[in-house]
Image (cartoon, rainbow, N blue to C red; front, side, top):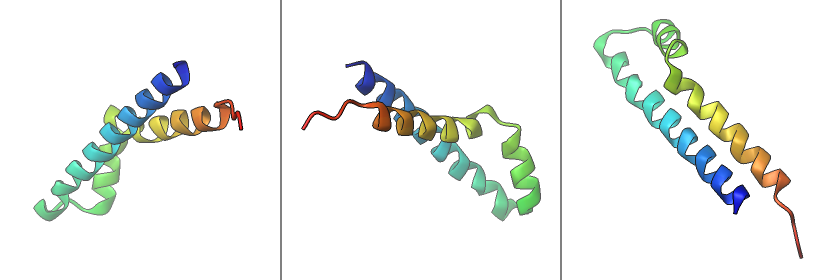
Amino acid sequence: MGYMFLFLIGFGLAVTGGVTTIAYMNFLPAGVSWVEYFIFIKGRIEFYFLPIGLLIMTLVIYRFPNKP
């Protein structure tokens, strides 16, 4: 049960980070360059949810007990 809960937390963080990263790409048509975009999202906490969530999901998948 604990592994499933951790996996769902990681999944939620990854989805939140991915959606906000894509949503902030709407600044590009407004005239923001790619360099300015990456500088902007580097300062946002939501951007770090994506790699943290992927890391949590990866750890849970590899730590989950396999019982054939």
